[in-house]
Image (cartoon, rainbow, N blue to C red; front, side):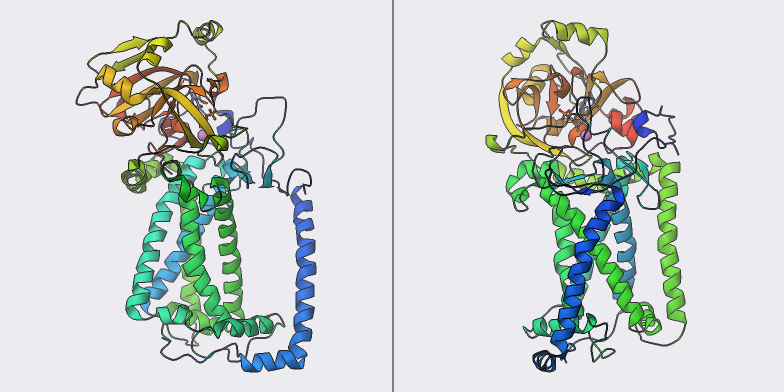
Amino acid sequence: MRLSTPERVVPHPSHDQSGGRSPTVAMGPGWFRWRGRYRTVVLLAVPVVVLAAVVLVANAWWAASPAGRAFVAAHPCHLAQADVPTDFPAWLRGLHWFNLLLLVLLARSGLQILADHPRLYADAHSTPGREWLRFRGPVPRGRPWTSLDDSVHLSGAVGLPGGRHTVGQARSWHFLAAPTWIAIGVAYLVLLVVTGEWRRLVPTSAALAPSAVSCASSYARFALPPGEGAPGYNALQQLTYFATVFLAAPAAVLTGLAQSPALVNRFPRYERLFGNRQIARSLHFLLLCYFAVFTVVHVAVVAITGLRRNLNNMVFGAPGHGWAGPLLALAILAAVVGLNVAANVTTWRWPRGLQTAFERTSMRLVRATLGRLRPSASYPARTVSPYFWANGLLPDSERYRRLADNGFRDYRLRVCGAVERPVELTLEQLRALGTASHVSQHNCIQGWSGVAAWTGVPMAALIDRVRPLPQARWAVFYSYGPGLSGGPYYDAHPLDQLCAPHCLLAWAMNGEPLPLEHGAPLRLRNENELGYKQVKWIERIEFVTDYHAVGAGHGGYNEDHKFYGVTAAI
Ligand SMILES: Nc1nc2c(c(=O)[nH]1)N[C@H]1C(S)=C(S)[C@@H](COP(=O)(O)O)O[C@H]1N2
Ligand SMILES: [Mo]
């Protein structure tokens, strides 16, 4: 399948949906790695199965022993609780099923985002070879390998929308669903409190912990705990639901937020809560795994403990024995599947429509919140990454080669458009406008990150020099480098972000002149935004009223060709 766009964008090999590789699995540190798609799974399964067998046998022995029997008698799995609501009000049932739809959308678009950089690290620098889990072979040595080469192909049955390097569309879905999920989560919490339904969920007695052990022991003997069917949740059920609602769900939101360049460059301490951004990203993935396991177990228990009665309860709020509940539940599940299929189809048919829907809703929210933060870019110098992934195509024009051969002495930055004083400046003249340095974390849309020290002229100083006209709202940065589908790379930034103190036109990286692959002689650093906004090999800057007349009108090369958002503060 190929990306079809209303503008007939020329596909590039990275968009080539047939050529992409499928994920493989490898796990463990570099000196000891399990490889291979099936071997890893088998090798992982062996210790899990052995451990499970040991636990099952030990538990059976313990439960049959006098001590075990006394324990269970003293701590019944089902605790009689006063004041616990037994009804499932309509709002609760509605939110339960809506939550299912959103979780599936979040999981599928999340996997698609992961497939774009299928490596999970514990170290902050995303160094190849140091992944604790990867779904891709090792990074080849001795030849250029950008993170675009690295993305894997996902089936549309798994990923939303499936395919290769469809991270732009996947993010649209992820960020349409995420604020909705947070909103219904907040509504749910408020309603829990207001209606007293929280009593069913929130543990209020320490007796719950030993009782939960009794429940677990019972399940581990493949026996339903005594008291099954009594009103209220059993102790283990209550603790699991509580952990899912009050720990796992907020943790998913918090680790997701730690992916925001604007947030971590403004509050590096927030990132350090998790260790670093890559640990937060790994946790975000592990939380997806938790939700998947929870759902499987939850559904299994629903089935085992009286499917028809439970489904009636889940749909109508009353534990009837008719077929109406199961039929309606089936219809709801069919709708969830149908909506997911529709999401895939819509994405491939109308990628531009999806991008526009995202831009008009969630992206505005992001811009009004994270986009407004003022980055402090105050990472300690010792955190600078030893390895920094490179992305994009090097300039290949004769003109650029001549400039580079001569150490960029003939380079002129042209600044034009809606300004009072258009200029052409040499690197010397640019330096004379002022110099600033900062250490920041670069976050690529694909998922890798790296910390580097940047030195350059503050954009604010250049803006002072050229004096934008009152109608100028955006500046478009044009590159000597080509985009993947041909033509020069470009990207638009709002003036308010460019005026922030930490926005630089950088000519040095980690105290050295900017290396060729990182954008020599000049690149942008706007620390509110993801990597693709940081235009390298800048040729000229044009101030404009809005970006609709630039390229295909969506705010940049990747915005035009890959349906990325014009704002990327997360
Ligand atoms: N001209 C140009 N600039 C570009 C790109 C590109 O393809 N062309 N890629 C962007 C992307 S996606 C990222 S993540 C960063 C990577 O910067 P680095 O190569 O210095 O790590 O550059 C950005 N700037
Ligand atoms: Mo990127």
